[in-house]
Length: 212
Image (cartoon, rainbow, N blue to C red; front, side):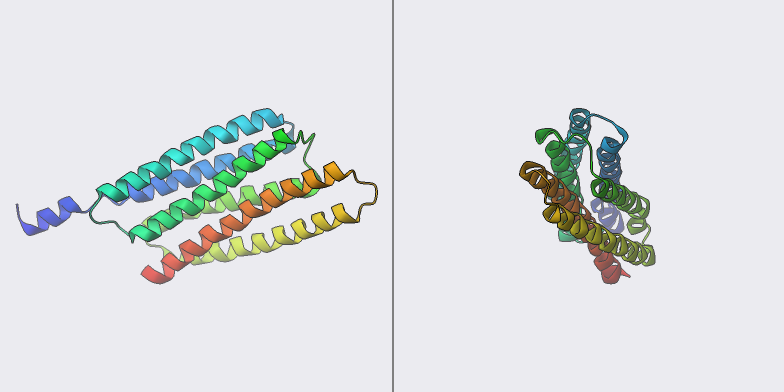
């Protein structure tokens, strides 16, 4: 076997890792949409069940990526970058799952307007990541930088909504203490998930700068 054939045999198909990460982004979008269904009247228990199943599927992909990293000799991008990107996407799904569990655990009757706004922003950010992540496979690094800027703007808007909503909770003299703590925790879970979307965008931007 010629040296070139040996190298080609050692090199993985690029869609092994790219495909797994892109599948992660698809599950992320589905999870964000399933969570937002709570605002459309889907019971909290069903929302939690749907999101939890998607979270289990996302975890399985992370395990597959780890196994591939242990098995493959050469990777299309640095191993550390693959692992960090996959872990960051998984963190978002985990936080969406946590929010769904909080809805059910605390018997949230319906989401407040700020919760709905944050869930909608989360869906938009998940859609953006799903749509633009394949640019990494195609080496279209300018697209990754551009989507990072858009996601940053959404994160700033979400931060404004979060701060205003928490401020209103503490300035409401008639609010029940349990409701205050419940709503604050839900808002914090959503805000953390949105922040993690920005983390993924930053990782993609760093990859674009590194390889562009």
